[in-house]
Figure (cartoon, rainbow, N blue to C red):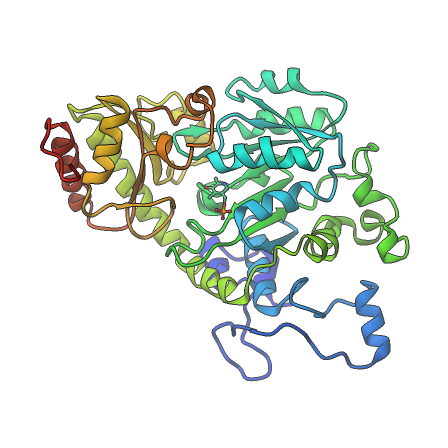
Amino acid sequence: MSKTDKNQFGFETRMIHAGTPPEPITGARQTPIFQNTSYVFHDADHAASLFNLQTFGFIYSRLTNPTVAALEERIASLENGRGATCCASGHAAQILAFFPFMEPGDAFIASNRLYGGSITQFGKTFKKFGWQVHFVDVDEPENVRQALTPNCKAIFVESLANPGGVVSDLEALADIAHDAGVPLIVDNTMATPYLCQPFEWGADLVVHSMTKFLSGNGTSVGGCVVDSGTFDWSQNDKFAGLTEPEPAYHGLRFYETFGDMAFTTHAHAVGLRDLGATLAPMNAFQTLLGIETLSLRMDRHCANALEVAHFLEGHELVDWVSHAGLDSSPYRALAKKYLPGGAGAVFTFGVKGGYEMGVKVVESCELFSHLANIGDTRSLILHPASTTHRQLSDEQRVAAGAGPEVVRVSIGLETVGDLLADLDQALQLAAKPGKHAAE
Ligand SMILES: *Cc1c(COP(=O)(O)O)cnc(C)c1O
């Protein structure tokens, strides 16, 4: 293993080097796309030991693939975690994060301010697995302590919440989780490891939608789960999937055998094996390329976003702006503590004129693209109530910060004056009665 794998270099060095030494056979400096499904065994004994998890190596790309493994090593390094498991999407990562220890009848607590798709996944689809979620307003962390039940297996929050402006008090939430003997899982998608390091504050697992800032170009859907390696899965009887014998591997106990790599090994050897939500090698390659410039992009994303937020806050057609970098934000102090390098590039603002005005502003933008993604180099705009948060109830939408007047932006890397001009013309056009472009 090279020095780059040991977290002793700076963040920017690890963005470029962690997990990706030159390819040993050809010397290829950029990581090759290992576009293949399977790997030749040396002999029958080698095959048997691979299948028994006694030897590390590649069998079949549903479980592991060299390009994907390089990305896993890089993300684990950037999060200062022990191991990472990449998968097909952010939503797949959320299933993989819970899968090793959730049984039918188990529950977990989640923030009621999450990406709308996560509220739907947890509240509706997880129910079919017999996994129950309790949504709680985590702004007051004691609410979480009060919501704990004996069958609660985890606490889940977003470090910086989508659609924006909300910062979770990770240190307080980690204390509550650890008092209850359960892991704190943090969705770090919006912050990225460049802006926020959840493990430093006591989080145990981190999940990402790599679709967003990590890949950064809007080319590749992907997700990952990172394990800190520090949670004691044997401290109580809640985590039998990791501590009890696994029949499919001849009674192997993952935690006893793999220690701080137990979660990551299980996520590959059982999670990806049986759930099958594997990341394609091409997407892993695109994401590796994206991460090479992560810090440069995030600095520019944050600077542009703060300038746009200030501009909108002073705009006559705007009621409020949610960016946690603004002095008016109730999350300003939490943002300074957990996001010292900037409060991200995705935020919301409330237009005067409600639902209809929100839709018109989005349709009137010319430079901003109207679409359902964030974290692209391009600036993006969306009206959550009519799109990403459409499947929620009115109360859930308001709780999630996606009420009728709310517009969400993901600020890109363009010349900031052009972004201000586009938003201004869109607001002015939308406010003109009967003179709307889309009418
Ligand atoms: C997009 C997103 C997800 C889901 O990720 P996909 O890659 O779209 O499956 C989860 N959490 C957050 C915060 C997101 O922004």
